[in-house]
Amino acid sequence: MTREIRTAGVVVTSAARRAAKERLGNAAVFVLLSIISVATVLPFLWTISSALKGPGQVFDYPPRWIPSPAHWENFATAWNRVPFGRFLLNSTFVACSVVFLRLLTSSLAAYAFARMRFPGRDAMFLLYLGTLMIPGQVTIIPRFILVRYLHWLDTYTAMILPGAFSAFGTFLLRQFFLTLPYELEDAARIDGCSRLGVYWHIILPLSRPALVALGIFTFEGEWNAFLWPLIVANNPMKMPVQVGLAFFRGMYSTEWEIMLAGTLIALVPTLVVFAAGQRYFTKGIALSGLGGR
Image (cartoon, rainbow, N blue to C red; front, side):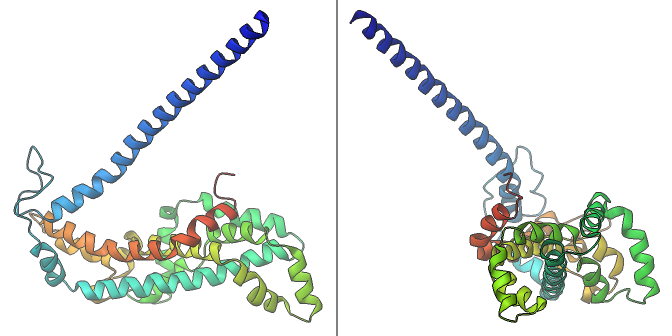
């Protein structure tokens, strides 16, 4: 009897120690994640605070997080100082065009790599993935020479077509297509559906989460693109908003509060797109094999 009581006491003590260690570990993880969250959000809060400050107050020391009075007119000034509406329209047109073309080309390539059998398929896919190892900056000069040779400089075509193809998008969609059951495709083929019919009526409707995830990635990347549009666009009426923000930089001084107000205005469309597709975004990342599984 005494031995059973001692054994039960040891078991209770061990369980209490494990519970205490687990609580301590959870508390450490919570503190670490809180610090990372604050460090991530802090620049965004500083941008909002600075966009509401008066001239010359952005770099005041010690910094004032709550400007008094708040200069809400900075947003109107940023909108009226440059053709901001035109910049937003250009960015929307370029980003939406690239999203459409990239989803089309990446889904077709991913369907071929995932569902069709042909000689050299895997080697070709590995070669295609190898292009991800090449930094984008390395290909800027060859792309510029090609665009100039085709007389596409200062056109929307120069900003749209180079982004229409993506090895990352092909990889992401291929991983998702591999998770779809082959029985559905076989049943459609027995019913007389062609390859393109299977792609259009079976594969694409079932791949909505992955398509939305790739669409969000592409839209945000193209919306925030700066270097390539800066190189190929010379006409201010064809520039996207990220290049247009550079107009707030003067030769001898910069109105930082106006520029930051314009930056916040330019940020709104990406937040809207992410909020609209958030329901599919997480599912698309998880099922395409990019969620760390």
